[in-house]
Length: 258
Image (cartoon, rainbow, N blue to C red):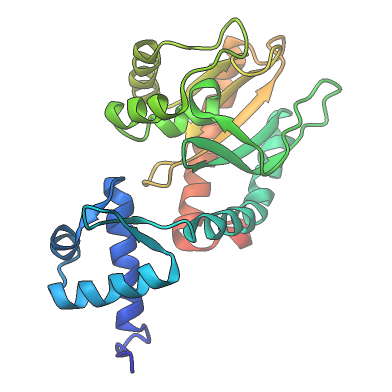
């Protein structure tokens, strides 16, 4: 029988999650000794838990006897993202009503940004984004904001896997140029999409931080989303919203809108 701790948690389950989080943190398959050291677990215990995770599809084993995250985790992330988006929507709606521009929240999904929440503005010209759609990280405000939360090496590895297809005349297709943008995003605290995926749309996005790999954005036509609007209104409001969203997620209190 699995051992229960005094706080009501089951030790084996807690350890299994620690192992999954350790593998996710390094973003490459890990050897059993490396996992045991990272999780501060005995080698036999690590081996038993890995065998269970392997049998259930939550990790996979490579020919070199290293372990990576399994495909069974992918649908779980999608279900979690959908539920999270519903919980965050009230805060997003409050923001949209205040700034009168469409707002979205996107989460890292492998090498893409996937939209989990969207509230359109009431303006005659407005942006509609379908929840569940994925967009390239390098060609979107939310994507670049999410990329900026990792290292330049991680960004380059992602770009190498996906390539950098051109969508519009302003799409960035040079990895070096994008890395320079990411460095500026980290300094400024926000990312811009100058019609790089869809013509006639300007987007500003802010990462939630706290290692969440989530970003929130506001989008509209360039005639409304001017430099002055970005700097004086959208960036301050999005920064505050990102803080509230991040705190809500971390505290597990997103559903009550606090």
